Amino acid sequence: MSAFIEQLPKVELHLHIEGSLEPELVFALARRNGITLDYANEAALKAAYEFDDLQSFLNIYYAGMSVLQTEQDFFDMTHAYLQRAHSEHVRHTEIFFDPQAHTGRGVPFSVVVTGIHRALEQARYDWGMSSRLIMSFLRDLPEASAIDTLRQAEPFHGWLTGVGLDSAETGNPPDKFRRVYAMARDQGYRLVAHAGEEGPPQYIRDALELLRVERIDHGVAAIKDPALMAELAENRIPLTVCPLSNLKLKVVNTMAEHPMGELLQAGLCVTVNSDDPAYFGGYMNANYRALQQGLGMSNSELLQLALNSVEASWLSPEEKALLN
Ligand code: HPA
Ligand code: ZN
Image 1: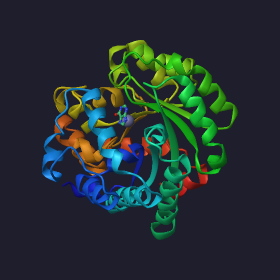
Image 2: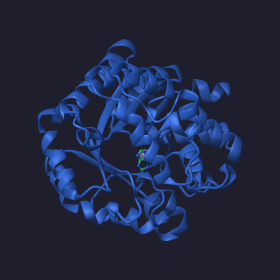
Image 3: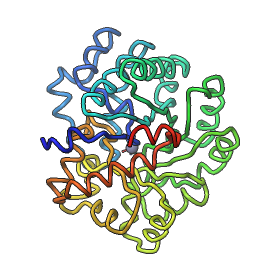
């Protein structure tokens, strides 16, 4: 592993906390909660991590998180991710959680958010690691369910900085969530959305224009639309790109074909992130290394990506100055 990458102070902006659940913890929580999984052991679960596309991943992602039942489970999962991130010199992290994937199984919103929040506070206290929490709506569910989730979040607004949009992209365009995004905006939430992962460049335009998001999660489809690329570069709209995720979900066939280099050259505010590291084969350092090895990126390009993440983060100017 390159010492430059390891020692680079990093910021992560696209991480699904449920996607950090390692097979060992899945089985430990299953045992603790008396749950029988469809997989005999950790090796059998890991062997199923061969994906053809986003949906084939989502099926296993939702199965894996079914072991999460108690506040302690959510704490343990979040703590494990933060410890790993800290060990890789991640200084600040903005993480997603999927409330509907838990409330839909009968786990109360308060249990989920309290467990995650406690772990974030402990990391701030123990390591000075800062964070923001983003509640993400599942785009394959109706907008009414997202609106209901926004209402359940009201007592916890102080712990939640933003809202996002994830899960199955194709056929679930940004337009479907116009009302709930307007409501979240009125309530003072900051706005992001997954767009242009498997979906077309038009979904990126729609997320910006109809939902009024300030960052795009993934957004790699912008490479197919030079006019959109120019607009993203001009306005410094950040893209939270996830190289190993794109490879694992076959958004790109090889890392050498990944558009990150071209997007960076074109002046976009592109950033490196791990998405669902337990499933995609690596945390932050592994994602930086994939760009170094697959695209031949230089240390100065990798540094620019890390600086882009500071710029794109929701840290205050004072907090940003302390990081640089
Ligand atoms: N894309 C869409 N939804 C998701 C992802 C992703 O990469 N990870 C977890 N939910
Ligand atoms: Zn994602």
